[in-house]
Length: 158
Image 1 (cartoon, rainbow, N blue to C red):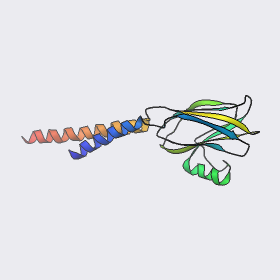
Image 2 (image 1 turned 120 degrees about the vertical axis):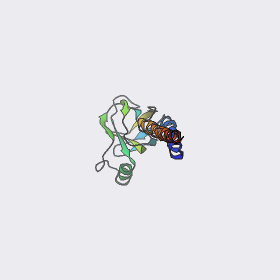
Image 3 (image 1 turned 90 degrees about the horizontal axis):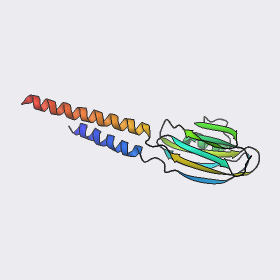
Image 4 (image 1 turned 90 degrees about the vertical axis):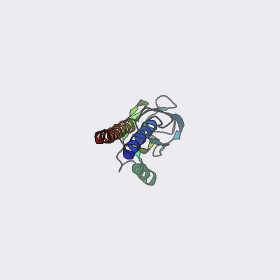
C-alpha cells in the first residue's frame, strides 16, 4: 500500500512539474561572423522560438544544441563536429516550434552570416511538457492499481 501511495504522489509531482517549464522571455545582442551569441535554457519539453535580426535584410544562422555540443562550440568556436537539435542556416528571421525529446539543458546560439548584426530572440514554453505528464499519469495509474489490488486482497481475507 505504501508503494502504491508513493507512486501516486510521485506521479502528481511529475504532472505539476510538467506545467513549470522555462518561463519564456527574450534577449538580444550584437553578433559578428564566426562569433556565437545566445542563451542557456533548461526545458522539459517543446517551446516556440522567435529570432529576428534588428535590420531588415541581415542574415543569421540559428542553432539549438544540447549541453555537450554547446561545450564543443565554446571550445572550438565552430558547429562543425556537433549534432544540432535544430538549425536554420542563412535566414532573415525564424519563428516556430522547437521539439525537445529529452528534458535537459540546451543552448540557443545565433551567428551572423555576413556582417555584425543585432538580433532579438524570444522564447515561449509549450505547456504541459508531455514527457512529464505522460510519466506522471502512468505512475498515478500504477499506484492506484497497486492500492486497489492490496485493498481487494484485504477484503478477500474477511
